Length: 147
Length: 98
Image: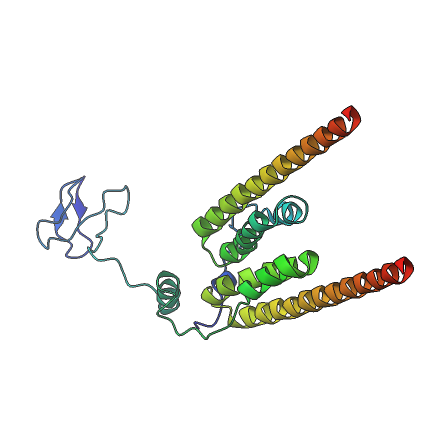
């Protein structure tokens, strides 16, 4: 069974790893017995860009989008837990979206996180103000009755 | 075009199922332990985004971390309620002895 190198067409022995005439590396898997160049073929351009974007996200020009994560955690702890939780959920997705290239999605999440931070802050402020008001009222009433 | 996210380029159909534990994280934050629950929520909220961006290893790491912190928060909540219950019972027993 005689085979030929697919580059220079020189006859080569079966299971040879290289062509003795041109030195091309030969693939040993079955029917093709064609040549396989030592360097892989270049990727298509869009795949190259995608690979570059995934391997080095900090070198790609990424706009600054605030994620409001610290604000969200603070309003969750100090103001209102139920309203702070959506703020944390949205805020912690901003950076992931940004580095996956979805800049519009990141801006959208950032705005939602900001909105929920304000809601939680105002709910907490109103709650604390009401508590202070009622405390003041009951204290005054007890003072008046004890006189 | 570099502006498109990689999940629009055609390999969303072979994304593995990675649980994000978001519901568990929110529940333990409300009912068990706030500080550890917040850590769990932050990790849980990143799982789906990383998965959609093709970062499967990162998604699995975030999922594991969310699960770990959910259990820690749950354990803290259970321990706190047991201690609270024991102290209440001790107070009741002491009150009835007097």
